[in-house]
Amino acid sequence: MACHVGVLPVDLLQTIYGQLGGTESKETEQSAGLRFLRLPHPRTGVPSLYLPYEMPQEGKSLILELQAVSPPNQRSWFMSNEVVEDGKLLMMIPVDPAFLLIPILQANLPTDGPGNFRPLEDIIEEAANKLASSPTTTPKSADSMISSEDIMFLSNLACIQAAMRRVCEYKEITPEIMVYRYSSERVQSYLRTKVARLSHQDVCEISRTMTRGLAKDGLLEDGKDELLTAGRLRYACDLVSQYLPRDVYDQLLSSYDFAALNAYMKVLKEESMALAAVNMNAVEARESKDSGDTKDAGNDKKRKAKSSTGVEKLKKANIKGMAKLSSFFQKK
Image 1 (cartoon, rainbow, N blue to C red):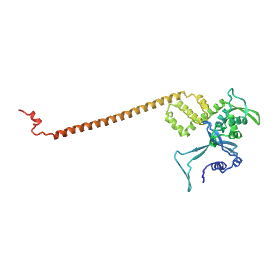
Image 2: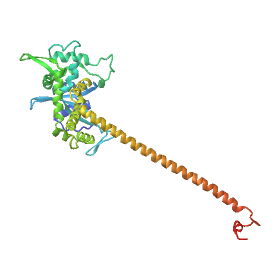
Image 3: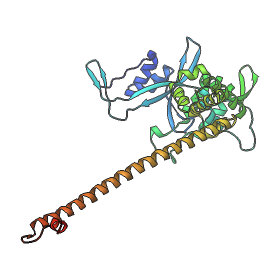
Image 4: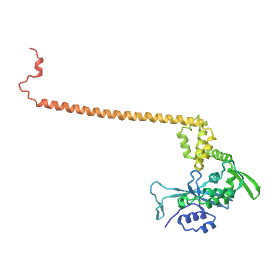
Protein backbone atom coordinates (compact mmCIF):
# COMPACT_ATOMS: atom_id res chain seq x y z
CA MET A 1 0.00 0.00 0.00
CA ALA A 2 1.40 3.41 -1.01
CA CYS A 3 2.01 5.96 1.72
CA HIS A 4 2.35 9.71 1.14
CA VAL A 5 3.06 12.52 3.57
CA GLY A 6 2.51 16.19 2.81
CA VAL A 7 2.06 19.55 4.45
CA LEU A 8 -0.35 21.14 1.98
CA PRO A 9 -3.95 22.33 1.73
CA VAL A 10 -6.36 19.39 1.84
CA ASP A 11 -7.70 19.76 -1.70
CA LEU A 12 -4.19 20.09 -3.09
CA LEU A 13 -2.97 17.08 -1.15
CA GLN A 14 -5.91 14.98 -2.33
CA THR A 15 -5.18 15.87 -5.95
CA ILE A 16 -1.52 14.88 -5.60
CA TYR A 17 -2.44 11.68 -3.79
CA GLY A 18 -4.92 10.78 -6.52
CA GLN A 19 -2.35 11.42 -9.23
CA LEU A 20 0.37 9.42 -7.48
CA GLY A 21 -1.93 6.54 -6.61
CA GLY A 22 -3.91 6.62 -9.82
CA THR A 23 -7.21 6.61 -7.93
CA GLU A 24 -8.58 10.01 -8.93
CA SER A 25 -10.60 10.28 -12.12
CA LYS A 26 -10.21 13.14 -14.57
CA GLU A 27 -13.75 14.33 -13.84
CA THR A 28 -13.08 14.52 -10.10
CA GLU A 29 -9.84 16.33 -10.73
CA GLN A 30 -11.43 18.94 -12.99
CA SER A 31 -14.39 19.43 -10.66
CA ALA A 32 -11.97 20.30 -7.89
CA GLY A 33 -10.35 22.87 -10.18
CA LEU A 34 -6.95 21.21 -9.88
CA ARG A 35 -4.98 19.44 -12.59
CA PHE A 36 -1.35 18.79 -13.32
CA LEU A 37 0.01 20.43 -16.46
CA ARG A 38 2.93 19.08 -18.44
CA LEU A 39 4.70 22.14 -19.80
CA PRO A 40 8.13 22.79 -21.34
CA HIS A 41 10.64 23.87 -18.72
CA PRO A 42 11.58 27.53 -19.37
CA ARG A 43 15.33 26.83 -19.46
CA THR A 44 15.66 23.34 -20.89
CA GLY A 45 12.39 22.81 -22.75
CA VAL A 46 12.09 19.38 -21.10
CA PRO A 47 8.47 18.45 -20.26
CA SER A 48 7.93 19.14 -16.53
CA LEU A 49 4.96 18.93 -14.17
CA TYR A 50 3.23 22.05 -12.84
CA LEU A 51 0.14 22.43 -10.72
CA PRO A 52 -1.98 25.62 -10.91
CA TYR A 53 -3.59 26.43 -7.58
CA GLU A 54 -6.34 28.95 -6.99
CA MET A 55 -6.64 30.61 -3.58
CA PRO A 56 -10.22 32.00 -3.39
CA GLN A 57 -9.73 33.41 0.10
CA GLU A 58 -6.85 35.60 -1.05
CA GLY A 59 -8.26 36.24 -4.51
CA LYS A 60 -5.16 35.11 -6.39
CA SER A 61 -3.63 32.05 -8.01
CA LEU A 62 -0.18 30.58 -8.36
CA ILE A 63 1.63 27.81 -10.21
CA LEU A 64 3.60 25.16 -8.34
CA GLU A 65 6.46 23.24 -9.91
CA LEU A 66 6.70 19.58 -8.92
CA GLN A 67 10.29 18.57 -8.21
CA ALA A 68 11.46 15.14 -7.14
CA VAL A 69 14.55 14.98 -4.94
CA SER A 70 15.99 11.48 -5.22
CA PRO A 71 18.85 10.43 -2.93
CA PRO A 72 21.98 9.10 -4.66
CA ASN A 73 21.75 5.91 -2.61
CA GLN A 74 18.67 3.89 -1.71
CA ARG A 75 16.70 5.45 1.15
CA SER A 76 13.43 4.77 2.96
CA TRP A 77 10.97 6.71 5.12
CA PHE A 78 9.94 5.49 8.58
CA MET A 79 6.29 6.25 9.35
CA SER A 80 5.06 5.02 12.72
CA ASN A 81 5.42 1.24 12.46
CA GLU A 82 5.70 1.21 8.67
CA VAL A 83 8.60 1.62 6.27
CA VAL A 84 8.03 3.47 3.00
CA GLU A 85 10.43 1.90 0.53
CA ASP A 86 10.57 4.88 -1.83
CA GLY A 87 12.83 7.50 -0.22
CA LYS A 88 12.07 10.10 -2.88
CA LEU A 89 11.04 13.56 -1.66
CA LEU A 90 8.46 15.49 -3.70
CA MET A 91 8.56 19.26 -3.39
CA MET A 92 6.01 21.81 -4.60
CA ILE A 93 7.79 25.09 -5.35
CA PRO A 94 6.02 28.28 -6.52
CA VAL A 95 7.32 29.45 -9.89
CA ASP A 96 6.89 32.88 -11.46
CA PRO A 97 4.29 32.50 -14.26
CA ALA A 98 6.27 35.02 -16.33
CA PHE A 99 9.08 32.48 -16.62
CA LEU A 100 6.67 29.93 -18.09
CA LEU A 101 5.27 32.50 -20.50
CA ILE A 102 8.56 33.70 -22.02
CA PRO A 103 9.40 30.57 -24.10
CA ILE A 104 5.73 30.07 -24.97
CA LEU A 105 5.40 33.62 -26.30
CA GLN A 106 8.73 33.34 -28.11
CA ALA A 107 7.31 30.45 -30.11
CA ASN A 108 4.97 32.94 -31.82
CA LEU A 109 7.56 35.60 -32.62
CA PRO A 110 7.50 36.61 -36.30
CA THR A 111 10.78 36.87 -38.18
CA ASP A 112 9.99 40.19 -39.87
CA GLY A 113 8.98 42.43 -36.97
CA PRO A 114 7.42 42.67 -33.54
CA GLY A 115 4.09 41.25 -34.73
CA ASN A 116 0.52 42.33 -34.09
CA PHE A 117 -1.49 42.80 -30.92
CA ARG A 118 -3.66 39.76 -30.28
CA PRO A 119 -5.95 38.39 -27.54
CA LEU A 120 -4.35 36.12 -24.95
CA GLU A 121 -6.39 33.08 -26.01
CA ASP A 122 -5.21 33.36 -29.62
CA ILE A 123 -1.57 33.74 -28.63
CA ILE A 124 -1.65 30.75 -26.27
CA GLU A 125 -3.54 28.58 -28.76
CA GLU A 126 -1.05 29.22 -31.56
CA ALA A 127 1.89 28.54 -29.25
CA ALA A 128 0.22 25.36 -28.02
CA ASN A 129 -0.08 24.02 -31.55
CA LYS A 130 3.61 24.73 -32.19
CA LEU A 131 4.97 23.39 -28.91
CA ALA A 132 2.75 20.35 -28.46
CA SER A 133 4.58 17.10 -29.07
CA SER A 134 3.82 15.36 -32.32
CA PRO A 135 3.29 11.56 -32.13
CA THR A 136 5.29 11.19 -35.35
CA THR A 137 8.40 12.88 -34.00
CA THR A 138 8.22 12.25 -30.27
CA PRO A 139 8.31 8.91 -28.40
CA LYS A 140 4.83 7.83 -27.41
CA SER A 141 5.43 8.21 -23.69
CA ALA A 142 3.31 10.25 -21.30
CA ASP A 143 6.46 11.56 -19.62
CA SER A 144 7.93 12.92 -22.84
CA MET A 145 4.87 14.51 -24.49
CA ILE A 146 3.34 17.97 -24.11
CA SER A 147 -0.32 18.31 -25.00
CA SER A 148 -1.79 21.46 -26.49
CA GLU A 149 -4.59 21.26 -23.91
CA ASP A 150 -2.13 21.76 -21.04
CA ILE A 151 -0.64 24.86 -22.63
CA MET A 152 -4.05 26.29 -23.55
CA PHE A 153 -5.21 25.78 -19.95
CA LEU A 154 -2.82 28.56 -18.92
CA SER A 155 -5.02 31.23 -20.50
CA ASN A 156 -7.67 30.53 -17.83
CA LEU A 157 -5.38 31.39 -14.92
CA ALA A 158 -5.48 34.80 -13.27
CA CYS A 159 -1.76 34.69 -12.54
CA ILE A 160 -1.00 34.16 -16.23
CA GLN A 161 -3.18 37.09 -17.22
CA ALA A 162 -1.33 39.28 -14.72
CA ALA A 163 2.06 38.01 -15.91
CA MET A 164 1.22 38.90 -19.52
CA ARG A 165 1.35 42.58 -18.57
CA ARG A 166 4.89 42.16 -17.25
CA VAL A 167 6.35 40.67 -20.43
CA CYS A 168 4.12 42.16 -23.12
CA GLU A 169 2.90 45.45 -24.47
CA TYR A 170 -0.86 45.58 -24.08
CA LYS A 171 -3.87 47.62 -25.13
CA GLU A 172 -7.37 47.68 -23.73
CA ILE A 173 -9.82 47.52 -26.63
CA THR A 174 -12.87 47.25 -24.38
CA PRO A 175 -13.25 46.50 -20.66
CA GLU A 176 -13.62 42.83 -21.64
CA ILE A 177 -11.04 42.64 -24.44
CA MET A 178 -7.27 43.05 -23.90
CA VAL A 179 -4.68 42.47 -26.62
CA TYR A 180 -0.98 41.74 -26.14
CA ARG A 181 2.31 41.70 -28.01
CA TYR A 182 5.53 40.14 -26.71
CA SER A 183 8.13 42.76 -25.78
CA SER A 184 11.78 41.88 -25.27
CA GLU A 185 12.32 45.28 -23.63
CA ARG A 186 9.60 44.68 -21.04
CA VAL A 187 10.99 41.21 -20.35
CA GLN A 188 14.46 42.60 -19.69
CA SER A 189 13.07 45.39 -17.53
CA TYR A 190 11.11 42.89 -15.45
CA LEU A 191 14.12 40.58 -15.09
CA ARG A 192 16.35 43.44 -13.99
CA THR A 193 13.78 44.26 -11.31
CA LYS A 194 13.97 40.68 -10.04
CA VAL A 195 17.78 40.74 -10.11
CA ALA A 196 17.84 44.01 -8.16
CA ARG A 197 15.61 42.49 -5.48
CA LEU A 198 17.61 39.26 -5.26
CA SER A 199 20.94 41.10 -5.10
CA HIS A 200 19.89 43.32 -2.21
CA GLN A 201 22.13 42.88 0.81
CA ASP A 202 19.31 41.71 3.10
CA VAL A 203 18.28 39.01 0.63
CA CYS A 204 21.85 37.91 -0.09
CA GLU A 205 22.58 37.42 3.60
CA ILE A 206 19.69 34.95 3.82
CA SER A 207 21.30 32.71 1.18
CA ARG A 208 24.17 30.77 2.71
CA THR A 209 25.22 29.51 -0.70
CA MET A 210 25.60 33.04 -2.03
CA THR A 211 27.39 34.21 1.11
CA ARG A 212 29.87 31.32 0.93
CA GLY A 213 30.49 32.00 -2.75
CA LEU A 214 31.18 35.69 -2.16
CA ALA A 215 33.47 34.87 0.76
CA LYS A 216 35.34 32.25 -1.29
CA ASP A 217 36.05 34.85 -3.97
CA GLY A 218 37.28 37.30 -1.33
CA LEU A 219 34.54 39.83 -2.11
CA LEU A 220 33.51 40.26 1.53
CA GLU A 221 36.86 41.81 2.44
CA ASP A 222 37.14 45.50 3.25
CA GLY A 223 37.68 47.88 0.34
CA LYS A 224 35.87 45.77 -2.26
CA ASP A 225 32.44 47.37 -2.11
CA GLU A 226 32.07 47.87 -5.87
CA LEU A 227 33.22 44.32 -6.63
CA LEU A 228 30.87 43.00 -3.94
CA THR A 229 27.92 44.78 -5.53
CA ALA A 230 28.83 43.36 -8.93
CA GLY A 231 29.29 39.91 -7.40
CA ARG A 232 25.83 40.00 -5.85
CA LEU A 233 24.33 41.06 -9.16
CA ARG A 234 26.12 38.21 -10.94
CA TYR A 235 24.89 35.64 -8.43
CA ALA A 236 21.34 37.01 -8.75
CA CYS A 237 21.56 36.70 -12.54
CA ASP A 238 22.70 33.09 -12.15
CA LEU A 239 19.70 32.36 -9.92
CA VAL A 240 17.26 33.87 -12.41
CA SER A 241 18.96 32.01 -15.27
CA GLN A 242 17.64 28.69 -13.91
CA TYR A 243 14.27 29.60 -15.46
CA LEU A 244 15.35 31.47 -18.58
CA PRO A 245 16.08 30.47 -22.18
CA ARG A 246 19.74 30.92 -23.04
CA ASP A 247 19.23 33.87 -25.41
CA VAL A 248 17.19 35.78 -22.80
CA TYR A 249 19.83 35.10 -20.14
CA ASP A 250 22.67 36.27 -22.41
CA GLN A 251 20.77 39.47 -23.11
CA LEU A 252 20.25 40.00 -19.38
CA LEU A 253 23.97 39.55 -18.64
CA SER A 254 24.97 41.95 -21.40
CA SER A 255 22.86 44.68 -19.80
CA TYR A 256 25.26 44.82 -16.82
CA ASP A 257 28.87 46.00 -16.67
CA PHE A 258 30.87 43.13 -15.19
CA ALA A 259 34.22 44.19 -16.68
CA ALA A 260 35.88 44.95 -13.32
CA LEU A 261 34.48 41.80 -11.74
CA ASN A 262 35.59 39.64 -14.69
CA ALA A 263 39.10 41.12 -14.51
CA TYR A 264 39.26 40.45 -10.78
CA MET A 265 38.02 36.89 -11.20
CA LYS A 266 40.55 36.30 -13.98
CA VAL A 267 43.43 37.40 -11.72
CA LEU A 268 42.04 35.24 -8.91
CA LYS A 269 41.89 32.24 -11.23
CA GLU A 270 45.44 32.81 -12.48
CA GLU A 271 46.73 33.06 -8.90
CA SER A 272 44.89 29.89 -7.97
CA MET A 273 46.35 28.06 -10.98
CA ALA A 274 49.86 29.35 -10.18
CA LEU A 275 49.56 28.21 -6.57
CA ALA A 276 48.31 24.81 -7.72
CA ALA A 277 51.30 24.53 -10.10
CA VAL A 278 53.74 25.40 -7.28
CA ASN A 279 52.16 22.82 -5.02
CA MET A 280 52.29 20.24 -7.80
CA ASN A 281 55.98 20.95 -8.46
CA ALA A 282 56.71 20.64 -4.73
CA VAL A 283 54.94 17.29 -4.61
CA GLU A 284 56.78 16.05 -7.70
CA ALA A 285 60.15 17.21 -6.27
CA ARG A 286 59.43 15.49 -2.97
CA GLU A 287 58.43 12.28 -4.74
CA SER A 288 61.56 12.48 -6.91
CA LYS A 289 63.76 12.99 -3.83
CA ASP A 290 62.11 10.10 -2.03
CA SER A 291 62.63 7.92 -5.08
CA GLY A 292 66.30 8.96 -5.26
CA ASP A 293 66.85 8.27 -1.57
CA THR A 294 65.31 4.86 -1.95
CA LYS A 295 67.53 4.12 -4.95
CA ASP A 296 70.71 5.28 -3.09
CA ALA A 297 69.78 3.16 -0.11
CA GLY A 298 69.42 0.19 -2.40
CA ASN A 299 72.84 0.81 -3.96
CA ASP A 300 74.43 1.07 -0.50
CA LYS A 301 72.94 -2.25 0.45
CA LYS A 302 74.29 -3.80 -2.73
CA ARG A 303 77.79 -2.38 -2.08
CA LYS A 304 77.71 -3.58 1.50
CA ALA A 305 76.60 -6.95 0.34
CA LYS A 306 79.53 -7.19 -2.14
CA SER A 307 82.11 -6.07 0.49
CA SER A 308 80.87 -8.60 2.94
CA THR A 309 81.28 -11.35 0.36
CA GLY A 310 84.95 -10.41 -0.28
CA VAL A 311 85.71 -10.26 3.40
CA GLU A 312 84.21 -13.65 3.89
CA LYS A 313 86.39 -15.06 1.12
CA LEU A 314 89.53 -13.53 2.68
CA LYS A 315 88.62 -15.06 5.99
CA LYS A 316 88.54 -18.45 4.38
CA ALA A 317 91.94 -17.99 2.62
CA ASN A 318 94.95 -20.10 3.86
CA ILE A 319 97.43 -17.64 5.46
CA LYS A 320 99.66 -20.21 7.17
CA GLY A 321 103.37 -19.24 6.89
CA MET A 322 102.54 -15.73 5.57
CA ALA A 323 104.09 -12.70 7.32
CA LYS A 324 101.77 -10.23 8.90
CA LEU A 325 101.36 -6.82 7.29
CA SER A 326 102.68 -5.07 10.45
CA SER A 327 106.04 -6.81 10.12
CA PHE A 328 106.93 -4.70 7.13
CA PHE A 329 106.81 -1.52 9.21
CA GLN A 330 109.06 -2.60 12.09
CA LYS A 331 112.62 -1.21 12.62
CA LYS A 332 115.32 -3.38 11.24
